[in-house]
Image (tube, rainbow over all chains, first blue to last red; front, side, top):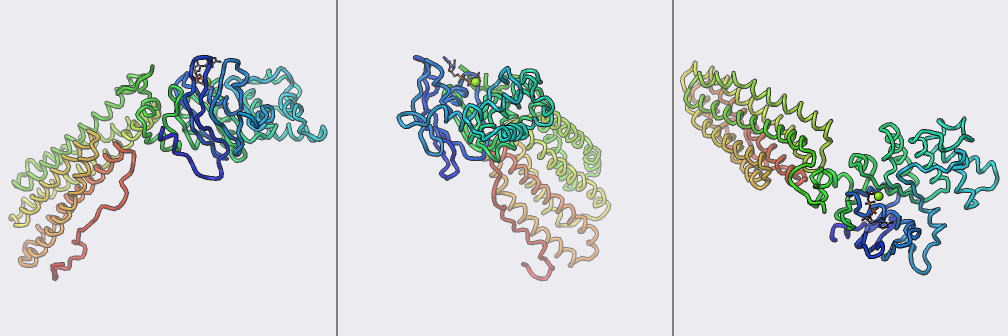
Length: 263
Length: 240
Ligand SMILES: Nc1ncnc2c1ncn2[C@@H]1O[C@H](COP(=O)(O)OP(=O)(O)OP(=O)(O)O)[C@@H](O)[C@H]1O
Ligand SMILES: [Mg+2]
């Protein structure tokens, strides 16, 4: 795939994927994906349903390991270190460095505070309770949720609105200070206002994190990302600067998909 | 397995894009006729044709108005991307150029009415020749635009130099003529303005050629087209 091979030769590459293939039993879901993710950039993964976006996203923090029949080959690196194979990064540590936000907001049935404190507690990332308070406050602020929940920190995380829940999940993800955040259709259950807030948040988070987002909204991909990769039937058909992809894609398939002539 | 086609999944989107395309085609057709008629009015000293050109101009404006509204609609409701976006934006811009072209045609027609009150002047023959060339280039570029044919549009663009050369030599011819017979100064001044109108049409045609290139390739044409219109340096004394 010559387009996908157009890789960036720079030092600011956070993660790379080379010839990543995934099988679910006999079925091949990814056919050899090459992609680079640059630090402080948002990369959008787009493509029709079933083309392998979520499968690929899960390769980036070894979430496929949790699916029994999934088999991953190829190489993925984080800061140059391999994720898979002998000497690969420990999955628990990896998922702290590469956090994930899912399509449906999935707060734990605990208090708002405990939701955000969960990661730091598991990984022992705090010195004392004051420090933990700081971490929770900071994460909620970063997620743009602090002002909405500061007076109800001990109410259930499941009791707030869907848009707030999704930002709570983002706060939970960033509380462990990850380096990369993966988001799988994070706004698909949200109204336009909540969506706009999450998008604004993604733009701010970009300063400190590398972000990979799967989205079915072409407008969202165009709004939040700097790079866009178009997946189709388990292949990356085209990857490029978002502006180029949405004004002048080089591949017919990309054009057909983003203009809605795919049918 | 999904395939890509020429048509959008949402058929009404196709209909709306076609509406825009058809409006531009209509505007282009009207304007071609307007320019050709203005030149004929000059050539034949026909005031009826000239008057008709002036009266028809609002029709072109209406087309532009429709295209403006339809563009806003499409941008707001369909959020076009890729080749659709390029088509919509280029059509909007081309409509602006075509509207100016029609204005230049109407201006030329208006001055021809004044010229018809005076004795004919010889440089009119060269002016009409230049007008016919520009009209030909305009037809060519509008066809290319509507067909998204970049190659054809570039061929037109490269010929704008011919127009500029004709304009420069016409300018000299008119100056010489006025100096030889000062009684023709009034008529010749009108001629000069008309020549400028027609030369501007050539520039707008060039713009449309560049947009055609953008529609089909997604790239803007880099680099300035070489300009060799020397009329601004004329003082009438040297052949420059
Ligand atoms: N756990 C699984 N077991 C078996 N097959 C799976 C599993 N997860 C995904 N697949 C298959 O792998 C392919 C890619 O699925 P994936 O979920 O990655 O697609 P996607 O691009 O994220 O689609 P969507 O946009 O609908 O979320 C599909 O054919 C899917 O059926
Ligand atoms: Mg998915």
